[in-house]
Length: 595
Image (cartoon, rainbow, N blue to C red):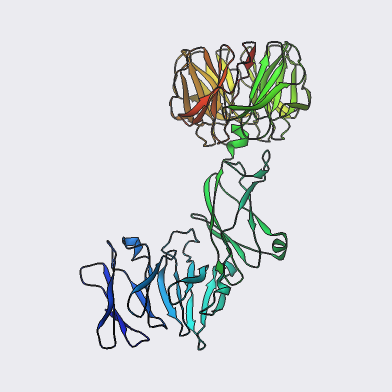
């Protein structure tokens, strides 16, 4: 039981009856007569609530409930209650979650509510508090206030003139001591900036601009609008809080750019601004999904650099065509370049000049290789690549085997020998042929199966067994057989990162049309199943690419009549799908793609 004297001569008694979690508050007159109804605060579980009671200058009083023992244990959401001289509750409010609370009233009217915030779940430095202070008038109306970067909370002194003096160590200013004088009837120096409108920018090609989805940029720039002296606080629940001083130049241009360093994965950041008086404003939540596999692995057939895979076609005449895609919808496209003739075959699409947009890899029937540099559907350069090999060497596809941002050429000879050309545009930097596994082994394509940024080689034996060579440039690091042998009716179709873990997986199709996916970690199968439904044997899975820019590969199909279709995937789950447009006719074929 505790007693608090009031300015009208009465007093308030607070008590916690034995065996309950209740707090009882009752006002009494100077003669001991109850005044007004008894107030009961009930925390349903846990220990009984802890309260601070303060006498107000108008004869009323305020009661504050410790957050940790109150709402956290089933109590009402409000934790501050104000009563008038008749003991009637006139106002109630909810602070943003404080413990270690203190109420201090001024004889000039009003009171200040201060405390630490270790009990709330705002992301802070480990072991740090965010103190809080709020100024109220005698009616319980909030005049101003907010959070402060203090440890553990501000101390309050009532000055002889009725003003409040607050002191705390500011975590944002190398723990320097701050002192703030507050007039009980004015909150002018407690005003804090509203939650800032924050914009995140991707600094890494191909998308330099506002981040609207997953990004491969581990060092994005956060632009925070500023209008005055202070600091910017950027917090993450696990990583803690970092402070950035606002400079005169920032104020002049109206914003501050902050470059972050983030790991792969999902991040939720909170951005707040501390004003010159040390009061922190509203918080903006910003979610960023970092996936370094996006550009290198999931969007290889992307001709306009929008991080959505596109569809590359070739007619039997030799003419190439591109459909620009947005999910399963066609957003544009046309024939590209001139018709080189039927002796030239489109083999793959890859970014050979490292401009963030896919280019077209060709091979002539005589073995000659050429590359067209593309910008959307426009041919902007290119030429013959390397020297004429011979018709026995077939271009299988492309991959970035040395992680330099330039696509390289993957070969296999008719006798089974594989080879790689490391490229810089149309120029061969180096190359090598490898040990011949024999004609029963066929190169399917390239994908990054161990997540090291270097493309690896996917194989399938005539028996149905798959294998993977883990590569570093033209060096074989390791690998081996992949998973179990599914049998000769199953065909490895492409490599793609279907679950967004930065490692390529294997897309399969049975001779009866049934598709399946194996989720991979190196050459180890970590999961998998058949996916979607069987569209029938007339539909062929021709590739994997990220058509909706979510960092996860999707399935590209083509029917025997030329009709294309896209299945948007989330791991082993089919999200949606459909045909992106009309059938261009059976004389057009979709070029197989991996991601």
